[in-house]
Image (cartoon, rainbow, N blue to C red; front, side):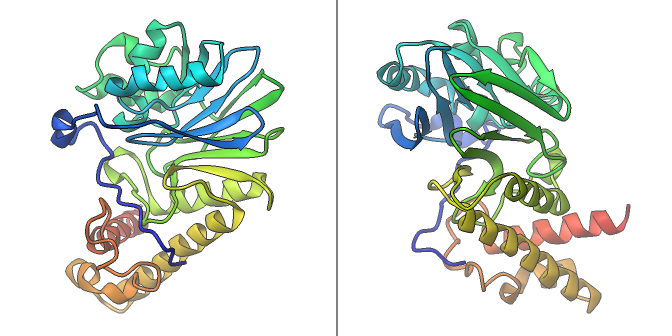
Amino acid sequence: MKKNYILSVLLLLSAIPLWAFQDMDNVKIKVIPMSENIYMLTGRGGNIGVLTGNDGVFMIDDQFAELSPKIKAVLDSLSGQPVKFLLNTHFHGDHTGGNANFKESGAVLLAQENVRQRLKENNEHPAEDKLPVITFNEEISLHLNGNDVMALHVHNAHTDGDAIIYLPQGNVLHTGDTFFNGAFPYIDLDSGGSVAGDIEAAQQGLAIINKNTRIIPGHGAPAGYEDYRQYLEMLKGIRENVLSAISNGASREQIIEDESLTSSYYTDAEVKDSFISGPKIRATFYDSLQAENNQ
């Protein structure tokens, strides 16, 4: 499962004060072709998915408000059409920060209904112009640019409002933050995320794709089926290891300190500078599994 690179997920939530002090001037938006008329954009924050065509641009996530002009410039180079629909995979600020800017430019905002509620409750995002205007519970489909865009709600995974988006004609899947390629997962327990849900999300994603599918993860490099499958196996393996330790009487503190529970995937040294370090992921698994046991 080890890779030659380790994703340093230092910047995830707009609630982290560091965001307010970051200089976005030097951020460059990179375009990675994924399939015909389908692209992945990277910059700072969550990976963006883009589908272009005569029907207008369909975009998945939008990073930070400060980057909207750069993102729009790149989109203009890819398509002469405006952003018609913008779908948020979840509510975190590195995926929704540009909502108001794109809505002002005419984009229709869509998301799972819990995303709208979370954005309304978040003091960083109180304004109506940042809120999705179309919400769905379990799934929604759009038909444009020769693709049937399928957005599926995966329950209590990274958060309580995650959606994975599959474009079958292009054979591209955007997982949002239910998949971090090359890193431990970030499971936001305070926002409805859970280990069980994150595992189920990966299982559901793998069930609807095939060996040739190209994957846009929430963070990290573009991925394929095998990367996604190995990510699922990591989640299952850590769960099994932590459950075994709990059954053997290990305390929360002992589990956090026990690197052997996770080192076959990434050592603590490898991820020491990542947002989700070894101790953090072990604490997350312990807390989530204990909560499940107490239900």
